[in-house]
Length: 264
Image (cartoon, rainbow, N blue to C red; front, top):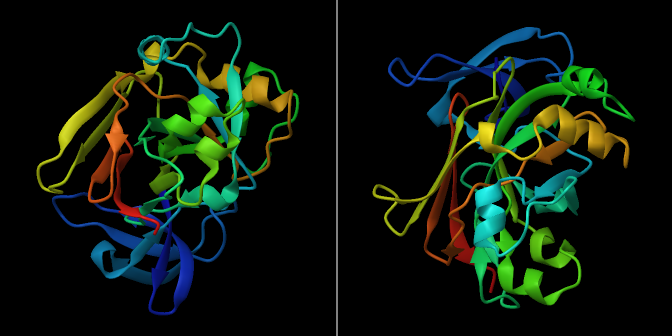
């Protein structure tokens, strides 16, 4: 299933995205959060008639650094011997088509296309690999926007990765997807109809696989329902500036697009 959170004429709801691009997508409203038993209200809208939001509420977003060897190399770093984790605040999360807002304090911001894992209703606390797999609700597209100059300047990464709008997520959550070997792609450009490919990678090339990441993080902090783990980015990260459009596409999930603007 594809679960979305969206604004419609009657308010804000969760729903199931139905159909395909050839026949046209619709979103069917459900009466609760996606973790509960799915019960449809009978209300449906064509997808273009609603506004998609970030598909889930998260208490925190956990990032994984240097989880693709080619990205570690392009940044001049070695592959870590254990997962390198950091936190992006929940206030950094935005949804599809929301603007990435670049503050004046940074002169060099980059995109990082990533597969995002959404933790399910059971959460995860000190779980093994089997428990980690059971904790997965689904997957979505993520963009770990990073002020690279501040990342190099600061002794830790909170400021560089924590600005409001620096964590686009969406367009929806896909459940039951085999993500062992799928493509992660990022395109950027000034013309939304003719974007340039910046990143192409495959999840099979992760240094640490998803169950390993969930288990590792859960031994550091309790993962709550809706929490997100960004699983790392492949090589090709590049500068984004106001006027750009950033597109993150993940095979089997969909496309997450966000314009880039100046905060000031």
